[in-house]
Amino acid sequence: MRLADRLDHIEPFYVMECAKAADEIARGPLCDPAAGGRRMIYLNIGEPDFVAPAAVQQAAQACIESGRTQYTQATGLLALRQKLSGWYQQRFGLEIAPERIVITAGASAALQLACLALFQRGDQVLMPDPSYPCNRHFVAAADAQAVLLTTDAASRYQLTAAQVAAAWNEHTRGIVLASPSNPTGTSIDPAEMQALVETVRTRGGVSIVDEIYLGLSFEARYGHSALACGDDVISVNSFSKYFGMTGWRLGWLVLPAAMVGAVEKLAQNLFICASTVAQHAALACFEPAVIDEYERRRAAFKARRDFVVPALNDMGLTVPVEPDGAFYAWIDCSAYSADSWDFAHRLMREAQVALTPGRDFGRADPERWLRLSFASSEADLREALARLKALLRP
Image (cartoon, rainbow, N blue to C red; front, side):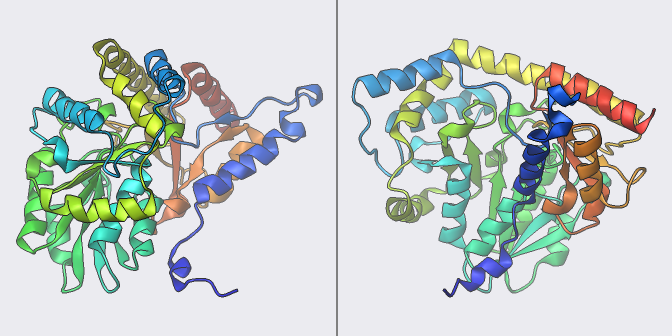
């Protein structure tokens, strides 16, 4: 059987490969209580330990019981698009017309639709190194080329307008950013974001910003949407992280008005629509009591950051830039190992703590880095840190 050439440009998702290794160890004697083992603590996957609030679950049940399970329009329920429009106004002070919002089957579908609508063979798309691997693979799946530009702590592991201007060439079509970022948890300063968008705009390019962690911003300085930079900015977002609906597979795009028809056509053919039940359930996300619950959760994630990052630094697992959002710490493990892949597997075997090595996230010295997710419970985080300290600083 002949497979498509585009597969040559899409690497395995090493996050999940490491997760499989952790699961295999978890099923073995090292984690068998009868053999004196202890359970695996998973700090490798970016999934909140909080699930959808009760009101959201009840809304889903009511939707099913009332038989409202038929297809929606490819752009999603108008009522949900209106709720999101109101959320942008209340949270960010932005006027986003509901007609510019397209509901999607998760942020993954949102970025796929945007890439298919905008990119083609021969196009180059600038992205930061490190960055979330699937984002560059969506570019590759559209037969375009992701060009990774090396970043460092000085730029908070984000692209700068100067970098973009220097790297731009006749084949460059645009940029794909993430703010806050996976794996670093760092955001782009609003002034720099404006400069980035203007740099791209003056060259006739497109700016796509992954904002799925925007609701989980911890610092007022950074908690601003790139949509404030103009109606030509494309924002990818999700109900998975701030709204706690990971397995419901529901996201959205905010698009320039002229682009909605093209994306709708693609969505009609590729997805028909996002889950109807998930859409009806998501309407409950915007009830005041539910938003209050989400804000308590955001405060909990910030509190976890505030004890995890100093503890890592204290044991020599250095976090060069404190994350200002999301729930990730980007760790320099070079004090202990020159190979983060092997080091991560050692931690799984000897401490029964699963972290993610840097191989997934870029090509600039990936073996130096580990990603820790502090989306797990406070109890698990404290136990994991104690185990790591006992192993590394006996």
